[in-house]
Length: 327
Image (cartoon, rainbow, N blue to C red; front, side):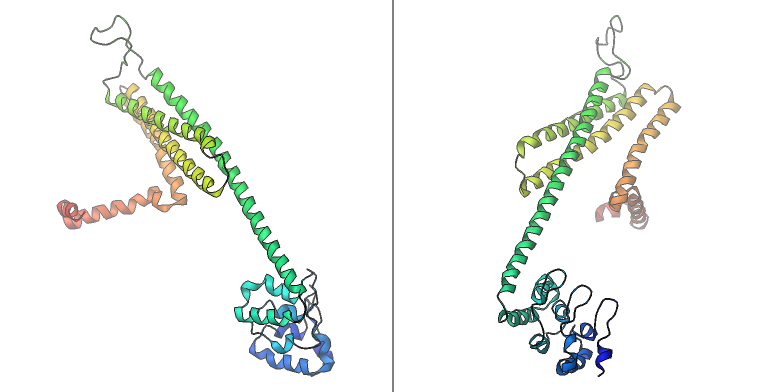
């Protein structure tokens, strides 16, 4: 083996030994020759561009443990790379890549060399634990900030819906019965009270008012009920936020229905305008369904088509009575 050829390195500063210390079968012969040849001893501790020796690379790969390399008298076990890590510290930081057997043998090999590496191992563990804890704290802080901003936005929307639905119920589409009218009509009652669309308007408006008010109360109670900022409180706060969000969505749907039915009750004698208003108002539910379908296909509008096809398939094949018995 020519010493000058073996001293060649690539762009990363790797020599021949850097490439074969991963424990692959084809590298054992090369390693044995390098260890036996004193003229190639400078390869044992040669560093690459990152300051890693072949021992550093061996201690961070998942290959077979090389006792001859680690126990070689010329190999510097305490050589440090540019991150100020020796080979044992590199093994500790890459412990998920190493087998338990290899890590155990590396620990034994360095135990007789110096106790410093084990002191630094504890320091590394403490640093890693501190970093993990810091990441958890940052995640919890970001989550808390997100929940607070979401709660503020939800509270504003819920308050607006409550105001609008209350105002709609007070003003009453079609107006009120005045004095001097039909004696059978009670003064101050709604003119359209016998209209079916108007009755639906009153019901949906009341539903929207109750749901939006419930969302407002939920948001107002959250700061009082969850003063602590632990994980359990955050989970419960998130559950309350989901409930309030559900109330707001249902309140918005009921509010749109109230608008559609109220407009139809007032415009009933102008049928073309009434139908147009109802169609435009119904687009709200189509838009919501399309938005939901972007995130969950089972909630989207297109998910209804396969169900309808399956329904008619069952009806045509088995008949209505057979389908009811099967269900």
